[in-house]
Length: 506
Image (cartoon, rainbow, N blue to C red; front, side):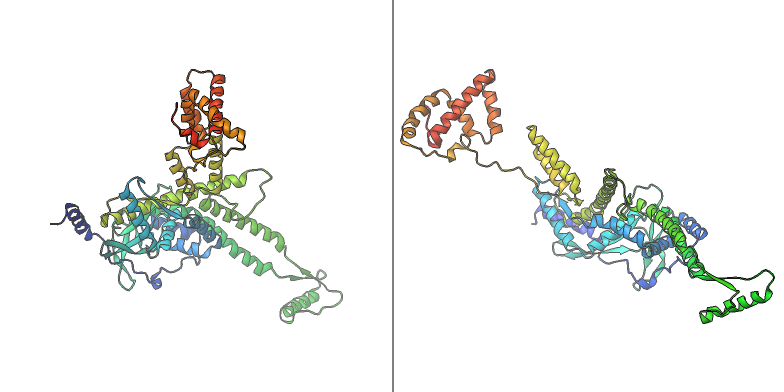
């Protein structure tokens, strides 16, 4: 008969096997992507797209988001910075309880599984789209193996397949050829990972944080068009002809000469005719264009990264502290993105993996990255100040510091102390015959009065421990007498050596 534990595990596996997705529902064909919507875009058309999205039809809104990210170099670079701040860090798996072997085994199994997941980085990058998009969805596909199930693939679900026309999110069905069908289904938690990586409480179909970028993008895109038209019209020099008032003949000659100049590259006039070449003030208009583009880009950077100094260096004044303040803001955003993504992956993937594989340990915690180098340095300075004050971290404090800094920290091993500490491992070689003959008698004399003090010092592992035990041994003795007694006992130990301390007290 099978053991009861094995029977329970088999029953759980049979119960959940029907809900484990082993075939993918998302078939991606790039030829089925919605068409580009950027051409002839204006404010009224953007408003119509937003109104349609608020009614639940988000296909055009998410398509416009896609076009903007692909076409706007500044926005794309800032968006990539925010993602790389998380994905560039090491993903650490922490056992739920380091003292429980089952939790440690579950952590090791999850770590090995994630290392073998196909498309892990790409899937996490897609989930991080939800820092600007209202939501991101990734499909999970499992494969049965001898010991349970393994994650075969993580497939990003394109945003244009999402729909909110019935009041909540649904996903359009797709056939095996990638054609989008008219039917939809709810996102099953056993099949999909749904991530929302922002703090807005507005409905998803309102567009998320990306909505506030739309008009800044429009202004920056239109300014490029306006600048191109200005250069086309005024970017090249033009001719200015002057003639006497009422001289129709000279006017006619100049007009014909100007019309021929565009084809011949020159003109012929009389000496009395005055012709000047004028140049538009393109430099001044270029500065205005640059300033306007700069304003648009700064607004995008503030939304995505919370600061602007990382996109373009700007003078802030000596000792202003602005750069450090901006770095603190960026670190806050990075920490939130890391915690948010880690929570989503743990709750919607790791917990499921542990359940369907009947792992007895609790699912591990995930941690993306650690504190910044500046924060770690501040913590080390604080630890140094604690040591100077005679304080030290507890075991729980060391574990917390290891988790925050990403460094595997343990207590420093105390080196072998000079005599009288750890005296059993040390001996004294006599320097001369007088010392050799005098050591036994002096040792026996001191040992009679300070045997307990010598024992306390010899058994102590460090100076701090010896001082603490000696203070308990002399609770009512004056400081001067206690110091004299300790000095006498220490002298006895130094003179007697390691071998004499181990002799029985007489």
